[in-house]
Amino acid sequence: MKPAMETAAEEATEQSQERKGCFECCIKCLGGVPYASLVATILCFSGVALFCGCGHVALTGTVNILEQHFSSNPNDHAILTEVIQLMQYVIYGIASFFFLYGIILLAEGFYTTSAVKEMHSEFKTTACGRCISGMFVFLTYILGVAWLGVFGFSAVPVFMFYNMWSSCEVLKGLPVNLTTSAEQICVDIRQYGIIPWSALPGKACGSALENICGTNEFYMSYHLFIVACAGAGATVIALIHFLMILASNWAYLKDASKMQAYQEIKAKEEQELQDIQSRSKEQLNSYT
Image (cartoon, rainbow, N blue to C red; front, side, top):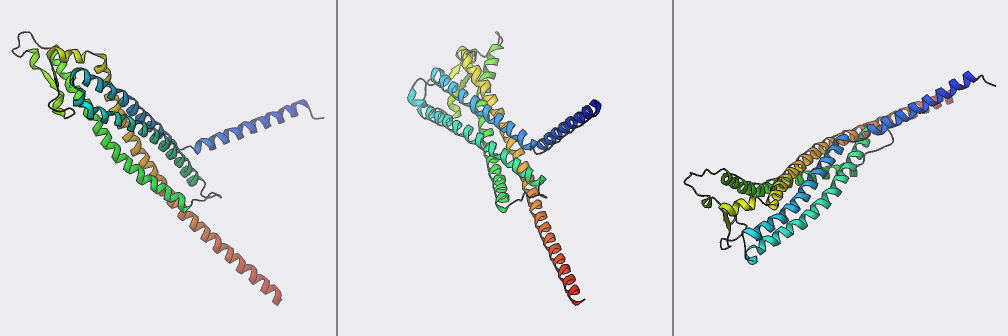
């Protein structure tokens, strides 16, 4: 029977080894996480969610403001209403597509990280994998250019609502003894081309304009458009981040494939050299 002290020491040694093994396993798992792709994915999801969610609600509020204050005839803004409804359906598609695309890019980041870290083991990078990585680089570039356009387009309603808000601020601070009357300060929506010039009333002046700016619908739509524009900008940054990651990973995979080819040629040459040496020894032994 072993003494109690030796048994306790062995148990403590086994527990320390188990803890060390778990710690090394955790470090190895954390080392395989593509943190750059993870950050870009979170930023992409956040930007797309802000753009789609806030943009959808803001467009609905815009239609209500237009119908209640700027266009009394439904035929005048029928085309605009259809376009806004179409844009809302497009928003659903954008949200679904980027949710799937972000997951795919994150998975591709895991793949390329594993390929680079394990290129000296049994893991082999294939030509198909490198081709897929190159395809993602091209597609992400196209999406980044497209989102630059979306970001610029999302700034248009912010500009329109800002003009209305600034006109209302002028009305609020209008001095009493000023020669310009409040009714001379107007906002004409028809000049933006979203409704025809025949639409009535088409513009809001003085107290009517101030009342529009005082509604919760205007306040919410204005700020939601600002958040949607910021979300589009965040998505552009995320796609640029993804593009840099994908280009870097593709270059790493290309270098890894060259290294693998070099190692295979080197191993083949060493094997041939060993075969030649073994045959030479066999012939020498046969002569002796």
